[in-house]
Length: 529
Image 1 (spheres, helix red, strand yellow):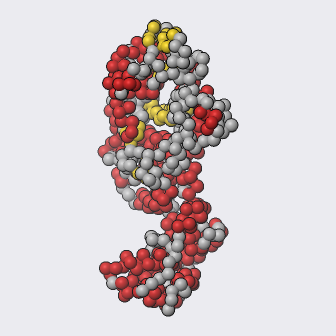
Image 2 (tube, rainbow, N blue to C red):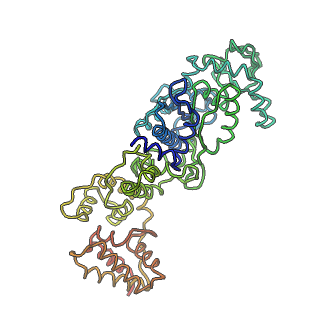
Image 3 (spheres, rainbow, N blue to C red):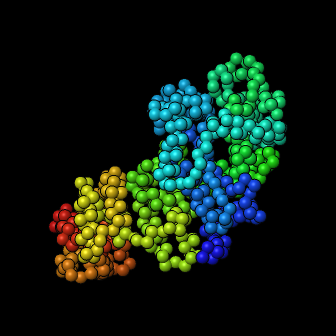
């Protein structure tokens, strides 16, 4: 079965397998000398981790899993924090901003934690990164730029940069504005007087000893010091390439906004004598206004926000799909993501293996896809919570669900788990937008007809199917087939208070005929006879 699955994966057009095949071609003769294929993701802890960070680790992990189907070569994932970077601006979404401004330019691991809980600002943000990666169950090794520089682990690669200093300058200078060329240096000394990461021209004195010379921009003193052991760091494009070389990185993806950076870093990587990693450039997530989400702005969604209103599987599903298409990331996308996820789960069992390998849930669950599907959609659950009102609680919602399920059917754990998400989402975001309008014109007579039809249905019929048929027939009578959309829109706006809604047969069956008739009566009471 493993060989059969491998053969199917080799031909699969699913993007994780397309990426994994790049790595297979990279090592046609088997495992590399270092013993494993190395995946890397990067994190800049100048701001709090957000879904963009989670996105990169998840997608990289999915490629790693796909490669494991194609090859027996071991793999390893490093989540690398650029925590030796100097703080360039104070994020908008952290406390004690005045204190942080006093430390601008210093490495993030040498800046006090504005939250007052960790050794430094970087230690705080690194802890947050590890926490949300651990909560999802990622397998990774955390790596700190500060620790790698200070321990000397990068020293030999740094000597390589100093040996090829002029060639690296030849790559970088043509990409810079004229005024930036005058001050650019691949190597950034850490000022021994102030602790600030200096953006100054540097002269290489002795590449093997790692000695450099620069002029102090504050007092004009000519300084000579080491570029090794954490006394200096590299400009980030050079740093990226150096890290690929020092660690032997085989795969790293990046956002579309870093395409030029990937190009320059790849050139430098080759100058340093190594092959650049495989990878691809994914499109960026946008907030509800179409702007790129940013750690410093804190726009878009945090991981905590998504997990307040939807399960982590729905987030993984949203992230997996169409990585090369820009997508908005805000609260409003969560309900659809939940229902699309469960639709894919429902499809999975009956699909042949080649389709299963293209189904997002296969990659989200590493082939261990759930077998049960909630009998009620999340959208329908939201509508139920909506009509129950602002004071709806989980027990009340579950009582309605129990009445809807077949007699004697056990509670559904997957559906039960969705109830708190629906209540929270409705309370915090949907309830303030709902406004039931009074019916008017033909809507009044159509609602009266629906009420009479519901009264005649009784409780013995197949509720959802019978009710849906009645709703449809009343719509044809009063609106005609060509205007049925207007009929359903009227139902949503007058009974539910929204422009969109569920299949009314399913909703009325869930909410109950008597309760639904009371909704109709309440709507009709707002009209003038």
